[in-house]
Image (cartoon, rainbow, N blue to C red; front, top):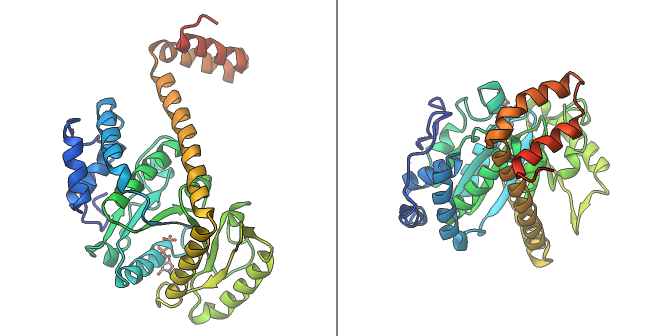
Length: 346
Ligand code: GDP
């Protein structure tokens, strides 16, 4: 993490948050609201902690901040590694800061746990943006599951909103399931493409393009300008019928390095916002996301408790081995473990 350009204090991976007593939640919430950056970083570290006592404080903090959330444009950005996400987000962030906005960049990268190094967080990225007082950049939280990472990112988003950030960018790497999780927490999901052939040639997973509310072909410059024009035309043709409610998915192009076309992307995001606010689509999308978040919270919490249960921990390895060897039927093993967990003797 020390390699990231962000000046904000981020604890080393695996470390839990600095302890915050429950009565301090109100003070921390106040400091976050005043725009105190250290408080903001501490608040996010707190919600990322897995300690039960920290969780109680985190819940109190979020409750105190909740009335001050929701006033941002929530933008998801995805694309395969190398498409230019960090270059784009930096140019985009600087552009909207120039218009008077405050930008928070969060990342969802569940690979960081498995590989021990995050694709999105570890390299030096967005150096200029990270120097801006009106920007806040936070690498992906570590987490064993995508659900766990997504949960913390949603909460971090609320904290950033309460701190006065009115443009939130949630970045994810376009290689797996994380796009769906990100599309489920933002108002607008944007896919960055390379100037090249169709989805498969670009390494884009099936179904991801359909999630997009906005498609942008990056690197429309120099030798790639002509190919970029063709790519735009191809995707316009392919997505001609793709609508999300009344919104027709636009296909734009830009050059993140030359900072060209960034303004049009921002204007288009504004048009999406105006339309979806007027027709109620944004409110219903957020309501549906809140409901889905409730259920994923229930799922994640139950699974955490289940895994931590002493009897389950004692019997799980043998039963898991039995299942993988084909000696025990998975349904029977699951029932045995669940009855231990629930203590119902079923
Ligand atoms: P990420 O992995 O998606 O975050 O991609 P990066 O932002 O790190 O960019 C990958 C490479 O593409 C870098 O060498 C960038 O300089 C280059 N790149 C990014 N945007 C553009 C662009 O608009 N035009 C050109 N020609 N190169 C770009």
